[in-house]
Image (cartoon, rainbow, N blue to C red; front, side, top):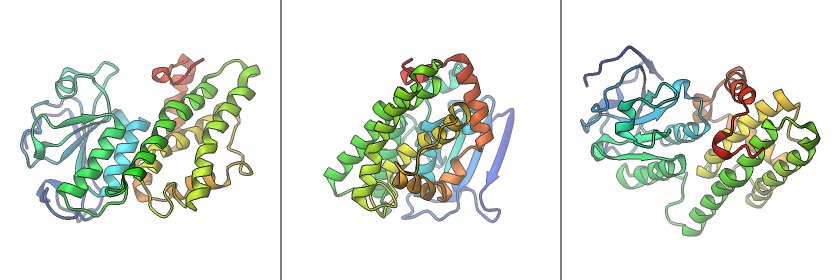
Length: 290
């Protein structure tokens, strides 16, 4: 594959590994032999038409986005080889808009399925990856149950609650500058999180579905991770263990998974990233309702 770059950094998760492009895309199960490529600078949008090119994950610089982290975790859990391509600049470059006219991350391109096989929106990307693993790669994956339509629907409902209820309360509390409103906003956030405490009580844990780590855990985790760091730093707030014992145990269990470790930022980096947002009174795409 011919690529013109300003800087290219190859990170091999195991020095003994072969290149991902040498692994057949139709193999029944991938080993831990993933080859991750971080590409900085100009990237020709025509690259990737070759079906032998690994699946491509498009991300923000330094992979700081919680939505991208969801898809990054999913790829790691499914052990699907991929290239990670960083999209630089607040205004998305033309080469990326040729791939995804909406300019959104995460975005996936699957060259083995055709040049125009592009997806975006983290929930859609992640469900596709599970179906791709099951149907194309013949994996026995457990992130999204394939034979239980009610359970699949429940996962979608829980994920919708994360995006449209909980995340709004989290960012509204974080960004609030009127301390007289903090108690009310904190209560709103805790009420939104009680649903997950109840789900874990019903499932028996350690994960939302019980013993299986799933897309429901992946969807929620990046936001809880950022909440734990940012609210402690700016609000002096931590989730009370007496009220959320199961959710805090869930967070600790998720944090030990290799896919989560490999996709996570250090606490100092989270604070550095969010400092710009807090100072600018950022709206987080409407999640901050102040």
